[in-house]
Length: 250
Image 1 (tube, rainbow, N blue to C red):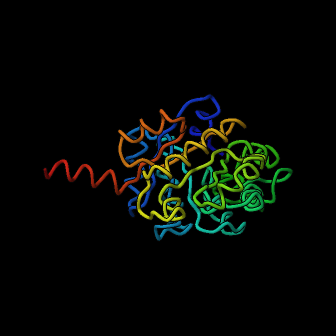
Image 2 (cartoon, rainbow, N blue to C red; image 1 turned 120 degrees about the vertical axis):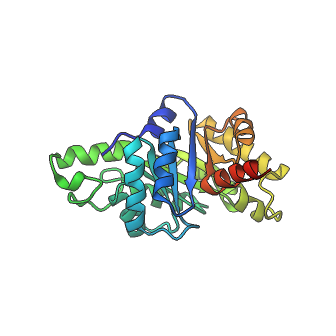
Image 3 (cartoon, rainbow, N blue to C red; image 1 turned 180 degrees about the vertical axis):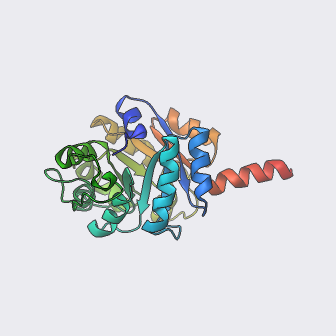
């Protein structure tokens, strides 16, 4: 199990910067790591990436020491397991609306005695069982893996205190685009109501010691979100390419 740089920085009270990988490029993953992003979030929700291909992206991230995380489309234990077994250091699950759903994520990510993750000592995550002590691997995996839950609906906001009370959540991610849709203003992720909800989540999560993450397509909005107390901000590969291309073509 590799050390989780992003998790270590959060535990040390630092902020982290990441990038959603939504373009089909293993080389782009490695380049983002070389450039210094703390983590990549491989988007297996909105991009057509399955576990076998994601494994190659994770390997590219590992080369640089960048933390590889995966946004998994389904909050189902066996689906999540396939991404963890190929080396994801954590998962981010969309549409977590209740404490029961948050607990299901924890149980899928963590081995016993914390959770119910299936154990196989012959996977990439466990270095195929070569030179490891299985109990030590289980303990370290439980320590290093990240549980990230997405809060992006009114229902999730209504149940936020119960969600925050679930042990072993590492980060609460506010999804502003889906939140705008939930509020009846779709496609307006910086709408005042969405921003107010983000600030409310930051305050309530901060009160129980949990960091909050969100998205920002550019550096200006990233700094604004950090100033609001967000601790983890991610751009995406589409935004990076688009901004660079427009600047070049201007």
